Length: 321
Image 1 (cartoon, rainbow, N blue to C red):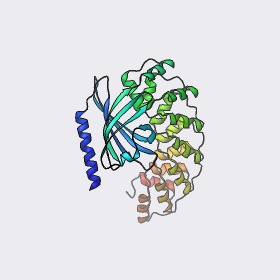
Image 2: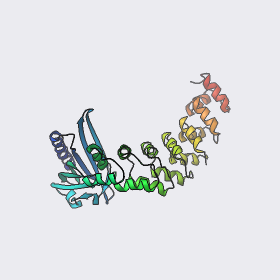
Image 3: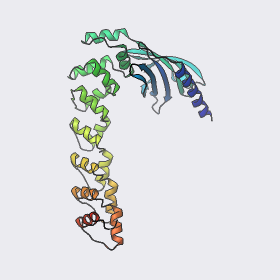
Image 4: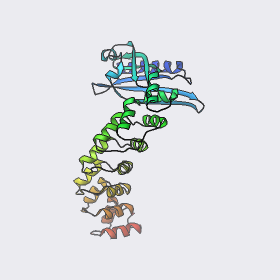
C-alpha cells in the first residue's frame, strides 16, 4: 500500500508538471524520473520533454543509467528521504540540465530546464564546425555528444562527421564508450554512418564478445549486422552444439534461422529417432511442413521407417493432414 502511495504521489506531481510546462523555440523544459538500480554506483534517470513547432507536437523520452557523480548536488541519502525537495544538475559539455523536484523512498520526479553552454560552441568552432542551432546543442547535451567523443573519432581516423551526423549519432545511441570498446575489440569502422547502423541494428560490444567467445572471431561489420538482424544468437549456437551441430558457418546459421530450423524442431525430430541430419535436409523438412506432429500422424496410420524424402512427398500430397 505504501509503495502504491509513493507511485500515486509521483504520478500526481508529474501530471502537475506536464500541465504547467511550456515549450518555445529558444528553450527546452521537461520532466525527470529517477529510480534506484541494482548497481550501487548508478541510478536510472529518465528525461522527458515536449516540443511544438512547424512539424506539430512531439513527445520524446530518453532513459538510462547514470553514475552518481554526474548528478551534481544530489546525494543518495536525499533520494531515500521520506519526502524531500531536491535541486541538482546534470552537466554535459553542450549544456546543463537544472533539475528540481521531490524524492520519497528511493523514487523521485520533477522538472528540468536546459541551459546551453556557450563555451561548447567555441570548442566546436576550433574544430572547424559552424555554430549549432539551439535545438542541435540541446540534443547533443541530452545524448551526451561530448568534446571527448568528437576527439575520439578524430584520433581513431574516422571520417570527419558533419554537425548533423554528430547529432544523429547521439540520438541513435553512439556513445564515447561504444567507440572506444569497438577499438579495443579490434574494429576500425571509420564510417560514422556505418557506426550508427551498427547501433540501430543492436550490434553491441557484448554481442561481439559473445560471438568471439563462441569461436566466431573478427567478423566483418556487415556480417555482424546481418547476424543480428536474422536473430542468430550465441544461445542458438549453444543449443545446436548440444544437439551435435558444431562449428556451423555463420551463413548457414542464418539460413537455418530464416527457414525456422530451431533447436526445438531438431529435438522433436530426435524424439522420433531422427538425428544428425544434414542441414540441407532439416531446411527442406521445415520448408515442406514435415514436423514432429506430422511424423506422429504418419506413425499412427502405419507409416513407419520412411525416408526423409518419402515423408516430404507424403506431406506435399496432403497425406496425414
